Image (cartoon, rainbow, N blue to C red; front, side, top):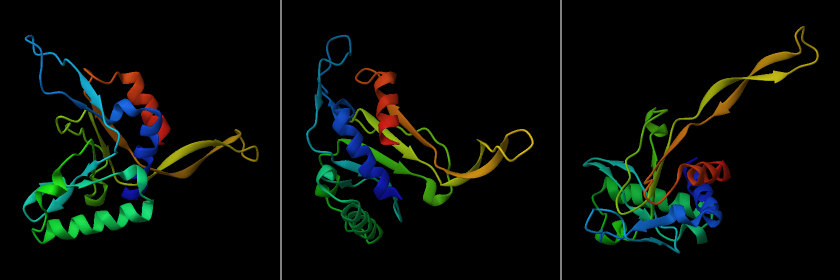
Length: 174
């Protein structure tokens, strides 16, 4: 499901482009950001569990790729990571990070922003939850039914992104 989430993030960035920004490392004398840069291309770092530990190569220009193309690129990057074939170019120019702990059983975690990016999303494992729905045939008019769910968390640098913008981006992504 990771390629779908990656594409959904990219589509949401069309409406909230500030999420796809970088912080200029030249801080003022008090340590504050002087400017940030909104990036045109959606170049996403993706977390890959490799024999040497976690690595974060990137998928370039996600905005121009289909879900199937993204899936193919994830597989290629994972194979390169497994075989030690990642190059410097695989790590350059990332503008946003996507981390998925769902494939190893995680549901929740707080992702850490990969500077100079302004945000990262962490996607948990798919699971069933109970949803209370209206049912006019039952005695009290409601019943519980299973619902597929996935939790995700977004960490954002609040020097660039306010919580309301991140919440709206999240809703758009969903």
